[in-house]
Length: 184
Image (tube, rainbow, N blue to C red):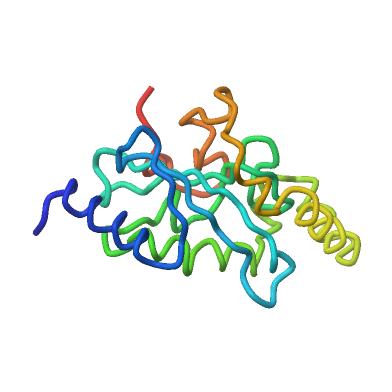
C-alpha cells in the first residue's frame, strides 16, 4: 500500500490533469483551490465556485476539508463560512474515495439533492420547505450575483480561510468525531 504522501500527490495530480482548474496555496499539495462548476440540469448550472480544499496529514485515511469561498445559497452549506455539511465527507469518508469523487460525485450530488432536514443554512432549508419557487429564485439570484468566474479570482480574507470554518461538522449527524477536523 502506498504512503499517504504518495497518495495525496497522486490524487492532487489526477485532479490537476482533469478538467478542473487547481490553484495551489504556498506551492504545496496540502491546501489549494479548485474551480467548481454547478452541475448540469440543476439550479446551480452556470455557476462557478472557488472551493477551498485542505488535506490533513493523514489523507486519504482522513477526509479533506471542503469549503465554498464565494457565496452559495444551499441548505447544507453555511452561507458565511462556506462549510459543507455532507456525510460522505464529514463522517463516512473512506480511503477508497479520492478528490475526483469529491468534485465529480459528492459536490454535484449535494447541489442536486439538498437535505433540508440537516441544514447548516437554516434560512435556505426553511425557504426550500415552505416556498420552493422562492427558494429556487434565491438560488438563482446568488448564482447570478456571486457565482461568476470573476468572483472566483479574489483571495479569501484571512479570517474566512480558518481551518475550522471548512467542513467542520456543524451539521447534526450522528458521529461524535468528525474526520478531517484538526485537533485544537
